[in-house]
Length: 351
Image: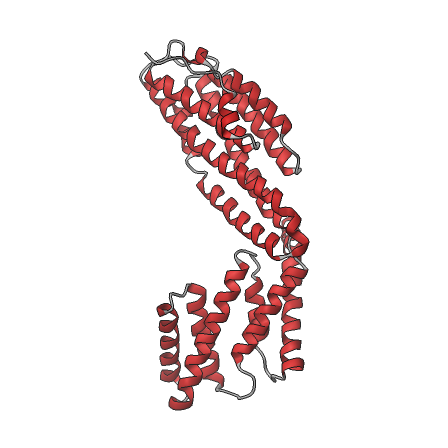
């Protein structure tokens, strides 16, 4: 019951937006335009809003194009060939084929077919065009979204926390595995790090939705700077995870080949995990990540030539990747790349 209650609370605003938009679309189409049965108006309002809030403007545009194509094909043909089983099949096929020829996406194509079915089944009734109903409904849906906008930060913050939590888990798992020189544990940490792409994709989707809301809704435009900070942190966290995967692969190779790795390496990884936790919490609160930056600078100071003592080729790659992870994480705090690289001790000269 508690989980159901949480789901309902999260969906409360989209439900309110949808109900208001559908009612207003019907009211405008009937009272102001004079259409007796404007069923396309509330349908268009609902689809243009979309419960997921993702890519709403594109969804509304595709809906309107799809409705226009379907209505145009159906109204042109039904008056000539009539309405029935084969007529509906033909109208739907032609409407969807035209949508595909127009390079339409799945929303346009399906909506063209659905609109053609409705027109062919109900027959043209005269009066206001159903395409006008779709335009009215879509415009009202977008207007309601602008007046009663969702919080553009909610999804982006949640997905960034999830991504940074996976990075913390990867750093700590690898630190523990290297401390025990446990090949199986290193392999398990590497496998988990390879499974983070869905979280990265979900963050990108949430950012796109948030940026659209912040751009479209005047009340949410002040959130754009914070969304940009989340975007930067997410990109750099993704890069850090990629570098961590390379680090884990080379560490695994070093262990299998009996190569020595610095005993300080697990500590550096653990320090980075703690800094990422600070970064996660400070960004979630909307604060400048000063504490995370300071922790990362402290960890960077320990990523010098001493980590290379007694190591071979794989060990050198491990240290190079560790330094790359530090640079990525410093950039996630807003530190310019030049300053992030300068915070690391210079590497030893190559012979």
